[in-house]
Amino acid sequence: MATPTPLREVTLVLPMAPDMELVASQAASALAGWVGMSSDRVDEVRMAVVEACINAFEHSHSEERRVDITFRVFGDASPERLEIVVHDNGIGFAVSDVEEPKIEKKLRGDRKRGWGLRIIQGLMDEVQIRSGDQGTTVTMSKSR
Image 1: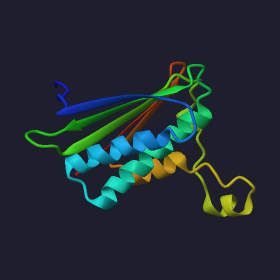
Image 2 (image 1 turned 90 degrees about the vertical axis):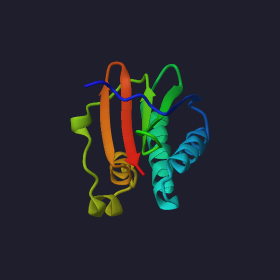
Image 3 (image 1 turned 60 degrees about the vertical axis):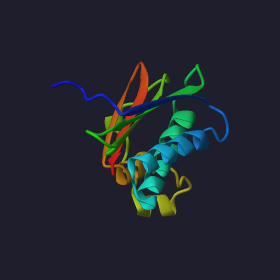
């Protein structure tokens, strides 16, 4: 089965610098709006992109200190689905070793963080995470 051709594709290369996740958020917002998503769904996409970027910034330990983001809009005649791929060339991690956050433990503990992947999965329709020696790639999509 052939991979569908996107109606539009936008690529960003962001330096790992303060507030650069907001640039990705603005692009996500514009494209999600073009797809015709409601304002609530646009906000969900924006938050998922911010979380994915922040995770890459904080955890990848990439020597290149950059994150590559590709936005693709798919649909037959008009925009129907937005796919976002966030990639870093960092050290990677074992996805199976990521501990599911437990609210009770987080509330009692000193470390309240660790919700990023869970948030992304809750906000998007589909999420795929691949990680290894070549870095980490988070592929997420949301339909109109």
